[in-house]
Amino acid sequence: MLSPQIRTLVKATAPVLKVHGVALTRHFYARMFAGNPELKHVFNQGHQAGGEQQQALAGAVAAYAEHIDDPSVLAPVVTRIVHKHVSLGIRPEHYPIVGRHLLASIREVLGETATDELVNAWAAAYGQLADMLIAEEARLYAESAAKPGGWTGWRAFRVVGKQPESAGITSFYLAPADGGAVPAYRPGQYVSVRIYVPELGLMQPRQYSLSDAPGQDRLRISIKREAAGVDTPAGRVSNALHDRLREGDVLDVAPPQGDFHLREDNAAPVVLLSGGVGLTPMVAILNHLVATDDPRQIRFVHGCRDSAAHAMKDHVNAVAQARGNVRKAVFYEAVASGDRPGQDYDYAGRVDLRVIRDQAIVPGADYYLCGPAGFMRAQREALLELGVAADRIHAEAFGSGGAPA
Image 1 (cartoon, rainbow, N blue to C red):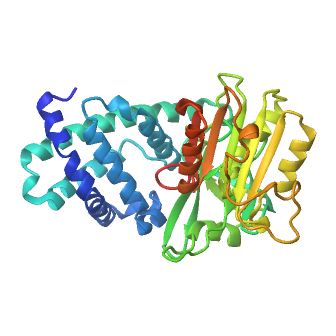
Image 2: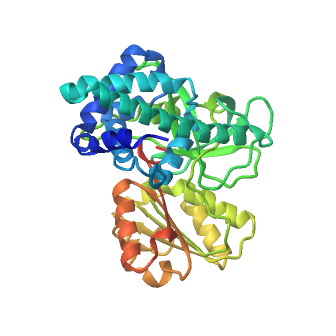
């Protein structure tokens, strides 16, 4: 338990961290990778280059300082971090390395304001946080290892199938190279995969949602090829997987993790809302409900750029046609002359829940959101405006602050 004096000192730094947090975390990562370059193989260097990881860590550090009196407020964030750490193979021995560089960065970035008393207070606070994370991660590691077919760390999986799903998304079917079993997982969760990137000279991990129902002898991940943007480079790992990975090749895979998954503690109706490649965990949830012959009402709402970007269209259409409890609504931002309403798409424009209010707003339902951050913010706001309770909305973000990208 931290003393009142330590909590007061740490809490007093929260406003400073909100202003200078990104500068601090940028310095921290540069310092850590210079001193411990082996950790470049653990951390997503794409998020480093784009600044996403620095911003995510800065926000987490400031939030921890602000809520140091009652860290339980941050439980949802901590849970998400713990799952991410286990998926990347973060172990107890990594925490002293991180702590050493973080405390040194506080002193080096904040200068004279970082007194010995303040740095010592942060050392105690970091120790408390590290102990909490290590304990939760140990529980998840043990849980992963105890499952039939379970493991921890990296396990070799062979590519047993490769299927294009759209112009930019391809599914990879993965089976254990050792011939062993695939563990159970919760529909909506993700796995980390790891591949060598020659341009960086590094092994690089990425998280991808599992896109099919559990209970099979292989895993399926469906990966979007990340093209270069105006201010962002092309995704090195996604492009390498698309271009280099062939049937018969072997890929390192970590056990399924993630706190975003179908709630199976009730039989509430399910509304699945996705944008772009965010449909991948939604298809896993849909397929699981179908495979278990679940009778609850299911709504599948999806938005994408156009017909070329529309993945798994035929599969979702077939499910909706075969199951009386499943209804779908697909939005195209750009409708081409050959696109067929009711078959290829249902509505033109971006997803607008007000347009499909009678279909999408189901009394007592749980709502699952996945897609780009802007899409999820818009859909969450729309759901709240339409009277959906906040505790019925469950979201998975693609990116360093959320889920698998």
